[in-house]
Amino acid sequence: MKNSALIALALSGAALLGYVSYRTLLPSAPPVPAAVPAAAPVQAAPAQTLPDFSLSTLSGTQQSILDWPGKALIINFWATWCPPCLREIPLLKEFQAADAERSIQVVGIAVDRLEPVRAFAEKMDFNYPLLIGQADAMDAAGAFGVDFFALPFTVFTDTDGNVLGVHTGELHGGDLENFAMAVAELRAGAIDLDGARARIDGRR
Image (cartoon, rainbow, N blue to C red; front, side, top):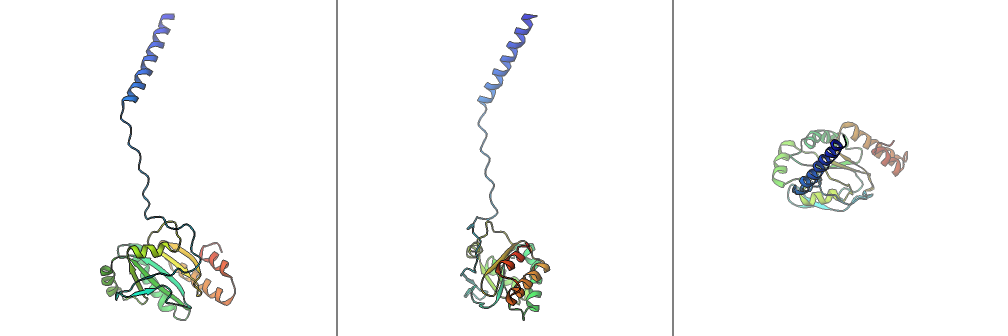
């Protein structure tokens, strides 16, 4: 009985030693690569006021985002290869056409090459201005202080150039009407700047 126990103990020790030796001889596993973000991170603090940047127009001239003083802005970053971006363009056109009396201006910023944007614009018949760029447009989006940039991406400002909020993802009619209401109430003095930002952010 005693000999059987000793034999079992010896076999267990040999098995353990063999397993350790086997693991030691295995090649080291390659390190797991870190996840690659969809876009490069930009400044962490959200912008409070409209940053100054200029991008190309369809005609090739440079235009500043500050060229619409006294207008509340819907700055919509999009691309011709982005399906949700293309879905929201008719909504933005409809909103712009109906909003002439509310001092709100839609500005599209195409994160794309000039040629496909120009070809798409000829078919779409935009009723709001377009600015175009690739790396420059990405830098413009980064100037608003989002952690990560994905398309579509929209920035809302008031008539004084204060950033009220940002929206990542496809816009819907309720988003635009909520913004228009916030701008109207802000101008009427019914809410303050913090209240307008809370409304855009969905906290009110």
